[in-house]
Amino acid sequence: MKNNLRHKIAHFVFLNEFRNKVTKCNVIPFDQATSIGILYDSSNEAHYEIVRKYVKELREVHHKDVLALGYYNQKELPTLRFSKLGLDFFTLKDLNWVYKPISGIVKRFVNKEFDILIDLHLNNQIPLKYVAASSNAKFKIGKYSKNAENYYSFMLSVGEQTQLPAFIEQVNHYLKLIKNEKSK
Image 1 (cartoon, helix red, strand yellow):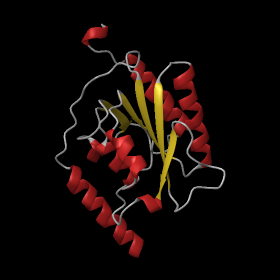
Image 2: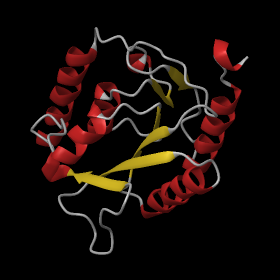
Image 3: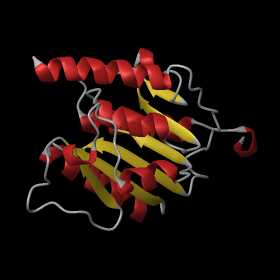
Image 4: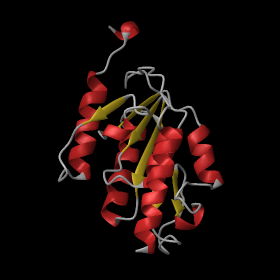
C-alpha cells in the first residue's frame, strides 16, 4: 500500500514537472548522427545482454559514439555487473523519494547533447521517464505514451506484448527512414 501511494505521488509529480515541457525537434538522420544515447531497463539480465550487443553493433558496424544508461530496480547492482566504458547504471539508491534520479552519472548523461537518444524501456518506469524527459538530446525516440508527447521527438506505437528485440528492430527501421532537408 505504501509503495503504491508513493508510486502514484511520484507519477503525479513527474507529470506536473514535465506537463508543459516541449522538446524542440531537431531531426538528425541516423547516417549523420555521431553520438547516440541509449536508455534502458537493466533489471532484466536478458535485456542487459541485448542492449550490450546493440551498443557493440552501433559502435563497430555503424561507427557511432554510444553511451548506454541502464536502470537497475534494486539498491545494488549484481556482483557480476558493473559500469564499463559506455555502459553505465543507476539504481534505487540513486533516486529521491519520488523516484527522480539524483546521481552524478545520470546528470552527466542527461546533460550530454546526443544527436539521438534511443529510449528502449518498455514498461513505463518513472526513473527512466525522468531521464528521457530531461535529456538534452537533439532527437529523442521512444515507445508511444500519451503523456510523453511533449518530450519525445518521435514515438513508436507498439503492442503491450512487444519484446525488446522487436522494439529495437522497429527503432532501427524508422531511424534509417528518417531524412532531413540536407540529406534528401
